Amino acid sequence: MCDRRCLDVWRSILERVLIQAGDEDLSNLVHPATASIFKSTDSQMRSRVRHVKRCAFVVYTAPKDYFTSKLRPMAEKLVENLRSTATGAGEAGCRALHLETLLYIRVLLLKTTPGFLTPVWPVVLAELIKILTQSSGVARNTQAGSNEQWELCLAALKVADTASLLEIDEFHLHQWMFMPDLQGTPSALAPAAAPDSMPSEANGGGHLAEFQPFSVRLTGGAKAGDAAAMGAPCITARSVSTAAGFVEAASTLNTNTIASIVRRKAVTLTELMRLVEGDFLELPEDQIDVEKPFDFSLLATSPSRLVHSQAPPHLRDAAAR
Image 1 (cartoon, rainbow, N blue to C red):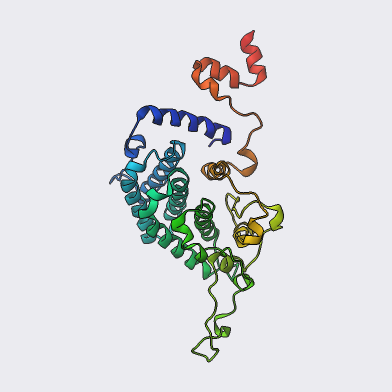
Image 2: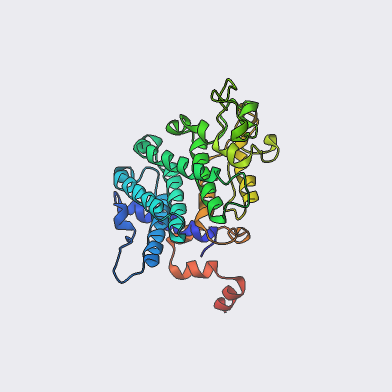
């Protein structure tokens, strides 16, 4: 495990490697997750999870649009991973693979020009709708959902949040399904009524119930904090362990209205990349940041000088004597 500074060092190193390698295939840069009769099913699944996370990190470190010529095989792998999670739903290994695949999708959104990802959107949208629809069934009963369920649901909302903040046209056509649209009408944020109390043509009510975005259904229409004091709707939580924690994190999407957006600063690409960095790290929140930034100019110096400069003061003094 490493902190954010260590991650920055590896990012800089891999970026230089990729620039020198030229138009390299991703499969040649990341060791594949091979199956073997001598490995258990759990071991093979853990290998696939690590492989997906490594692929995501390599794409994250690469310059923008570096892998555009290899998007087709990468998209096929994404579909294969999503199918695997569907057939093994409920298993711990499949849940981990699902989370890493959603993180991989977020990285692709950040590091690829939207036009190149057009063929991927049908698969991504179908997966997000499936995850959030399944989670909506337990959203009203906070005791019904498990920690893994809320983690997966939060990961899906993060994909939708990232696509919205990047203003991707293919996603904006469907954004109304995931979060309140820019009109922000009061009825869109009203708590959903029980199915048997919703007026409809069948029971003589004269009209159908209004559709509610997934973020409203899952959070009951709650909003996070004062909209004027916040940035643009952006989920910053790295993980959640309870339904209450999920509602607190996901309710930021319910502030996606014209009145609130014009009063808030936009989220920059750098800030979105930093949020992805946090999801790569496995350390607790209070340990991922360090006070002293790393001096990247040292990467061009000798290894001995690099180690000496980053050593604690008492060890540097001892080495000098």
